[in-house]
Length: 455
Image (cartoon, rainbow, N blue to C red; front, side, top):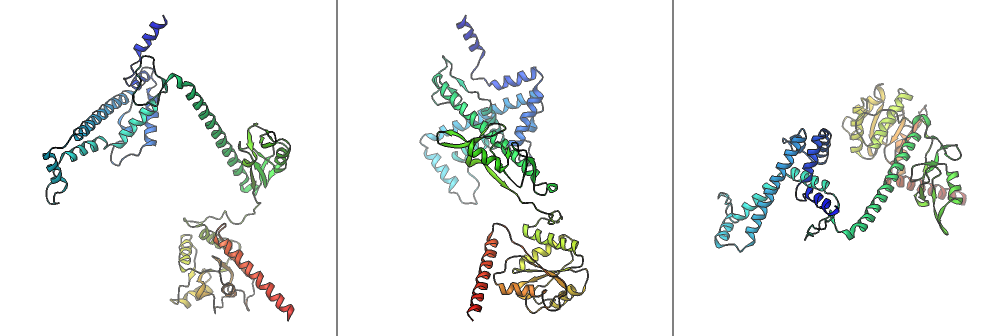
């Protein structure tokens, strides 16, 4: 009975027939073909680029019957094209005749003015191009074939393939593949846990960046129930604890073999996290610094900060006039465009053209409260005590030039408080330049004080 049933099951399986057509047929019979068709259409739409003015593979069928017909015809066309290419390559394997050589020479070495001579090589190339012309169709069919191949064991009476086939394994390879798949599942599960932990961490970080909390994380520590506040630790599972509790866990409850206790277990989910994978978060409680002031247009970080600062000054101190200094004229032009996009009145000094006219309009017109000045021409010899704010767009290497720029506002005759705004991009060369300037200033003060003591 066992042998006969085994033979009967073999008779029902045709290894050369496309079994996925039977799957489509069964889906039609059980009235689930709509779901199958929608999934295949979504996969084709998302995974393959659609050529302009051409229908994609997903547009060529609407139901299970259409999908079945399309797959059959495409596979037949692909098989015919493959056979044509194979026959053409076989014809090229033999020794070419003199007529073929002469025809090829005339075709490839002909003058441009002569018509195209289709030699045997060009004809076979055209056959190959016709076979691979629709790359999306071939790729889709190949992807479908790869997705429908099942890992199986070679049957007892099935001939051993001459070329190794990836989805057909020998009986003695079952245990090896089983171990490999189990390892792959364990690795994928671990990666999934890390991704879920990252998602949980980002969710907690979003809560800590809420403006209503002022940069404080309102979530309580799961162990001591105190708010996490500005500093906390995050494990790979995504759960957060205060630094004090994490320090106690690391010191007293680390796990590992022998003296190599370099991991801890989460107090909530018991997932293991090595000491090196613990992330420590430090936030600062910030007040409202005008980051909620909208800036129109797409600009760089620094230009947006300059425009936002100018808008904040206009809101907090209406009528205050501001000087914007930059070493580069092109930077001032970019800031001018940003001010224009935000409907802010300004005046700009660019060389000697209309110098006095633009300067007078800034001094005496109430609606113009912003003046853009290049450092090399606007920091010397001008008396602009009408302004009370000086904005330095980038660090100035020469301290004398910086003092001259500030001196346009902070000088004899000024009756109002003056403010200086410096703009530095964090973690760039500008921070190092500013630190270098401060160090040089300290050295100069120390040397001058020593010189004064000696004198």
